[in-house]
Image (cartoon, rainbow, N blue to C red; front, side, top):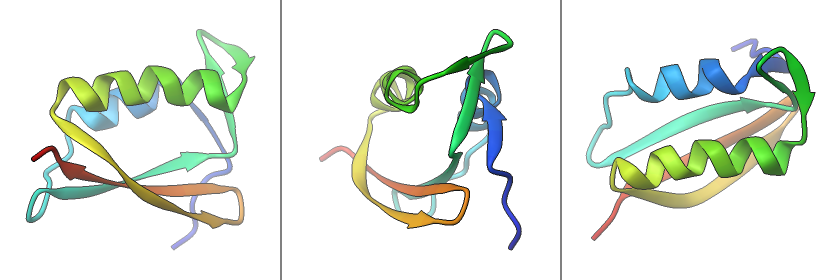
Length: 79
């Protein structure tokens, strides 16, 4: 699967609204380069915003896999 190496924080947040977890788990591709409100942003800042939304949805981090152009993050339902 060819995944983009650039994206927006807004697109990631929108994607979270459409995710259908399977067995209480889901994955989220996060491109290496992100923008927020049209301006480049640091990955750690972007992930703090995204993680805040994920935690509100009652999921927690479950690792990630580094790949060319970004990371594939895994999340699981909180117990």
